[in-house]
Image 1 (tube, rainbow, N blue to C red):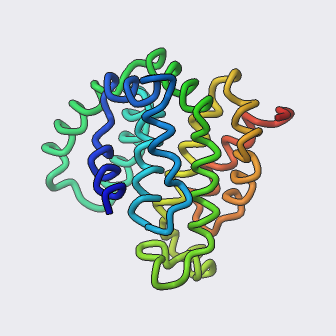
Image 2 (cartoon, helix red, strand yellow):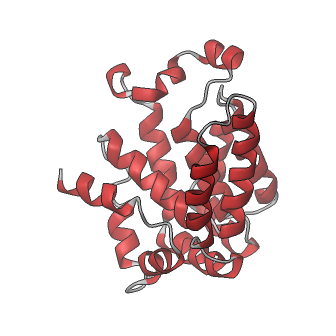
Length: 211
């Protein structure tokens, strides 16, 4: 219960300073304390870890690029309320950190074993019993997913996190060593197109890399 509460609070770690603190304090001690819960049977904890780690890997430029993609999709559905949301998002984006800031954070994350933690989260997630599936019930309905384009938010976040950590060449050996490539290969066969695209992009970065 306590760990779930702490992780929920840490979801706000989206600013440059908080990311750097969590990744580097006492040689990554705080981050390691977080990811040791990666194999938890508690769905909220697993989702929290993946989302926190994903937020930490994203720079201001990354967030803006993602948001622009999301906005284009939203515009096709509705525009009401977008203006206010845009302003709030812009503030968060500007605080996310520069490419160089996040490059350092990613390096610390890779060394701390974040890829292994994300891989463990994915393994547990794939073995969920139906009652623990929540918004990911689509995992049991692959044909439905292919037809509807339904999202699997958890798996998309996991694939995106590993993908972001594989951008810098110096992190790629650790990504492979921590089962990142094997996890991406599994995700590349996921029914959701969003998951597959993110996994496939990361796999191209890791071609030829050995542990």
